[in-house]
Image (cartoon, rainbow, N blue to C red; front, side, top):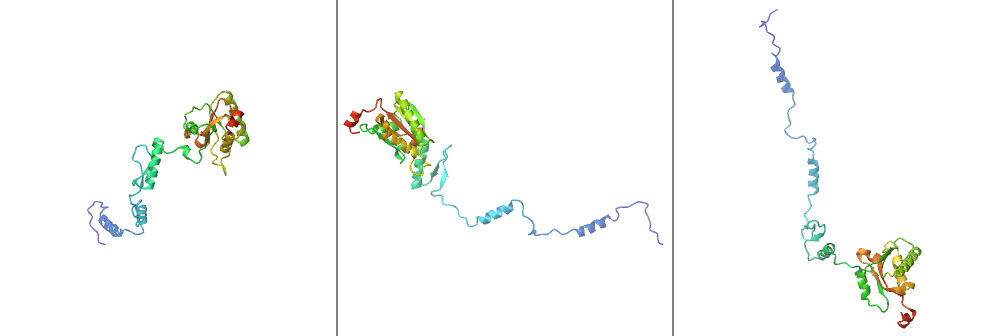
Length: 235
């Protein structure tokens, strides 16, 4: 047997270079093209879907576009083309919100008023405009007709006994009624046909701050009209 010469030193890494070369050959080569089956990075999938969905979308014209007002603290909308009908409507709406003019209860179909035969109609208009201070009020809203009539009669009896002249009766607008507003119609009837007619100088729907069409101002006289006066003037 042929003997190999030994240097007398232990050389454990003698074959290391060969092992490394074999491992490098076993590694899979890196693909030059991306794997089509691989998932796209987070966020790119949604972006791609959005771009595809917006392919045929065209931007809107800036004419007549409704935008938020640049006025600080104002949420009112305005129209760029102020010459249009919508622009004029929104202009009036802005004026109403900012300054109040443009809406009056007396201009609505719900407004009602009335005066005694010999009283100038201007009295009821002044009453509506708040020219007379309210001295007492009652809320009939939500009552039945019978309950409301009893409370109404008691209220007017006490008001006349205490020499009160200007009253406010809240009856509601009757928006939930299938036909006409029940209590509002009854109040009108009690003021024009009932026994309280001889005490009434004028009445009118209230201003918005006092209930608008859902309430009525009543102006009473100090003493009732006599039958002699009523017959003379055919009231």
